[in-house]
Image 1: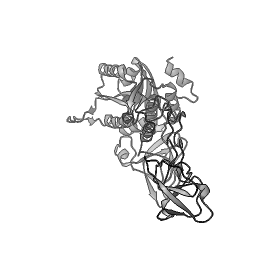
Image 2: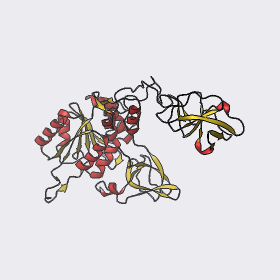
Image 3: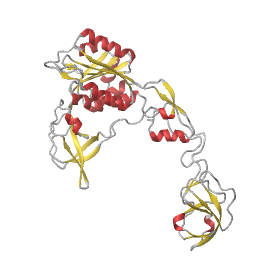
Image 4: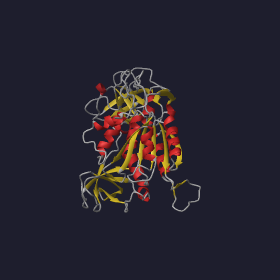
Length: 419
């Protein structure tokens, strides 16, 4: 028995002929391992990469108590229950500290980000004071330490702020830069090879022959993979020829961490893809209780994990986002929950649904007054790629659920911001 089969057989409820979506995710995740190789990059080039080291501040941020507003730095002890008149003795600007020390009854004019003058502990915003010459009148109602940012309030010296496995977004780059760090260790990019299979597929730029269709799957896959920041190897269209398929699989497995194919995994298809997968490595063939995207293969060829997706365009995108995306992020070294977030909305119309499978209907989420509602894009066939273009979300109808009445709450996964 193969190692992968041993792992998935140990999962409770594993049934390759009627596999629940959650069980398929669990089976895939149990077999994967993240890449371990790292590289150092300048901070500006690390966007979208996965951190491979702890970021531990060598300094406090901010490095000194400073002002959060334009106004006047004062000693709170000087302020009375009514108006208080103080004497202005100087100014502190961002990058230009006040050299003296505040005494009783004194204040210093400050701008945002200036070092708090010695002796001061509170900042009164300039909009509420009255100024006449060097006399500054402070109104009552001030609070101690207001409008002051304390040294180390953002980041403390010696306290880890970012950990390995974190996805480096713009905010993380800013945090690293605020510590004066110029380069970081990141996991290397995951290498993903993919190709389409089928004699009926034609490449863009050629004239269609009778019975042929242009291959769209490689373009949607390329777009989805690009969003994940992986290293992409497009091996094109591979014909239904055993020698060509074997050569493509061997080439992909020689350098890639993951291989994605489209087509050739359905029951009854007259293809060579399934036997070639089984010949070259470990391959499991699943019928997942979902729509669209029921047939799927998962396995390993050499050191590369294999994802065999259906051939229909919508099914390719649905299975990629429900299974492959999360797997690739995990293999890239990302920690935390990488599953797509679910939101709730009210069904704007009745939805047809058969219990016993999870459905991913293409939907349009919109505001109706103060309520979020969702409706389908219309025809939901797995070959209707237009439905994905018109949609801004998936309507996710759970395995046990049957038809949905208008007004009932349903779960949605948003497309915008999907990565």
